[in-house]
Amino acid sequence: MSDGTDGTGALGGSGARRAARRDEAVRAALEQGLLGPGAPIAGLLDVTGIRESAAELRAAFEAVTAPGTPVLHAFAVKATPLVPVLRLLDQEGIGAEVASPGELALARAAGVPAERTVLDSPAKTPGELREALSLGIAVNADNPQELERVDALMASGTTTRSPLGIRVNPQIGGGSIEALSTATATSKFGVALRDEGAREWVVRAYLDRPWLTRLHAHTGSQGIPLALMAEGVAEAYALAEEINGRAGRRQVDTLDIGGGLPVNFASEETTPTYAQYARVLREAVPGLFDGRYGLVTEFGRSLLAEHGTVVARVEYAKSAGGRPVAVTHAGVQVATRTVYAPEAWPLRIAAYSGKGLPKEGPAVVQDVAGPACFAGDLLATARELPLLEQGDYVAALDTGAYYFAHHYAYNSLARPGIYGFVASGAGGVAFAPVRRPQEIEEIVAEAGGEHADALTGVLRREGPGDS
Ligand SMILES: *Cc1c(COP(=O)(O)O)cnc(C)c1O
Picture 1 (tube, rainbow, N blue to C red):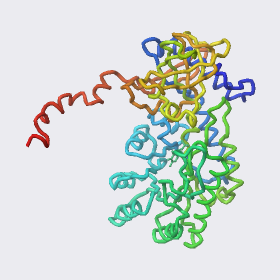
Picture 2 (picture 1 turned 180 degrees about the vertical axis):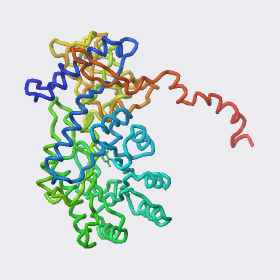
Picture 3 (picture 1 turned 135 degrees about the horizontal axis):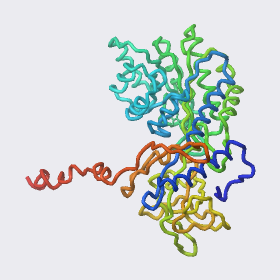
Picture 4 (picture 1 turned 135 degrees about the vertical axis):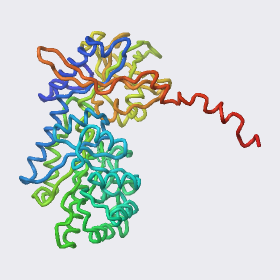
């Protein structure tokens, strides 16, 4: 790998192994024709790496919790909404946190059991709530109006195995990325705990409803310092203690501490680690780990980001105003956040030759552009890389979460295929399709193809001006 930004010499073992697996996968994807002139973009998922991260997450919390503490790690499906990924994680002992009917359907299609699924969305309809309760899925109510809907379902005689809780916003402040800071004073999520009367309302809500047994807080994603995340968890813990104290029993038996562990997009090093976060939490909130509370976590980005790579062919290499520009097939459709908010979401880029070998050569300042028709469609600006040439490939690293699985249909660009890979022994790489590339016919169908004459047929002579 030669991304020009990364002190690869200082790598820990697992980062170096991950980079080596990625290099092998890029070369094999080209050899096996998953990538090439006719398939100029693909997403690759490192199955070995995903399994390792899942194991690290489990081990990190096992190391800090009292023996026998129930811990459910529920993967935030929005990070990588792909059924085979959810099944892989399920096999690794990781459940699913879902936030829409679509995400719930993906988790169910993957076979994630109801008792390892958590529903958290901020806009649940009565129908969604009813379904979740009938399936026995855990639900965290976002606000008083939602709790009223749950009340109505409970009053109508619904019996449910669903663990039920309330989401609170500890309002401890935001991180460096405003759009991802969920615990600011005015965040849209949960019951804002420091607003006047809110804390007392929450406590009363529990005292009046013996079936509320969980408490949920997710204090943000990417850009939140660990200490601030721990502060949010500490606030939730203190509230649970207050509720239980006033109830005179252990009514809240489980704390859902959300996800949000940041990912290091700047180098191959995994930092912070789950183990570090778990230790910070135990130091900040020791009572949470003494066995009196079960735990739910909801990590997304930190489980998948490092294990995904989007690889795209350099269709043209040109120059503008003296700066080389590589026009590739990866842009806003697979790296939406990076293209629209490059300061907040810079990605490392690795350069490969047409045969998929890491490209050597002196660093040259150049732009890496995408295929979309607007000037800002750039994966990287003024980046130092070996000079990219026509027929080379670029890889956007750490894109396994919130990137190529989140297709943005600008210019009707097709969703790329996504392939999982493992080393097959004997130096080879085995691939399995995770999501096949979108066909052009599908693009037409999804763009109203079956209604081609909708606006020129029955509606032709209607309209306010005609009558
Ligand atoms: C997005 C989200 C997560 C996961 O956040 P990551 O930063 O991907 O770990 C967890 N819980 C809730 C409620 C979320 O909205």
